[in-house]
Image (cartoon, rainbow, N blue to C red; front, side, top):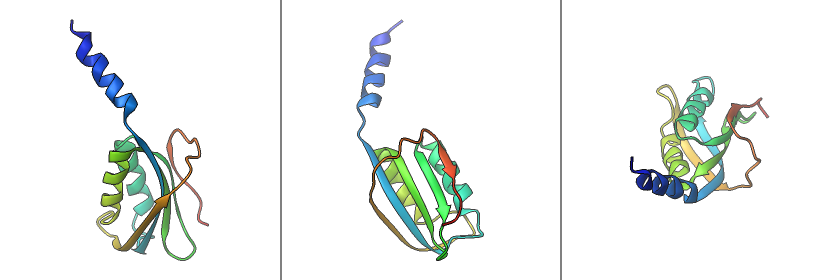
Length: 108
């Protein structure tokens, strides 16, 4: 059994740079399962954080994970689920809150 390859892959994965961003998604993004869609997409990419609706009709999320996975999810956010119409996505660096899962939070 060759464990060297496996050990190298584990070391590479552990050393992957991590990123945390706060995302604001504007458009027709409430009432179209955007939060549930984002939660599923985040879990597929092993991204931690949360997502919530905002009173102004937008969706806000905190994403934390490997930088390439977060970037990939940000690109996906520009399209969203089938019924959504995304007009604008804005992201900014954020502090990681330590959450070890991805949850849907209450509207603010």
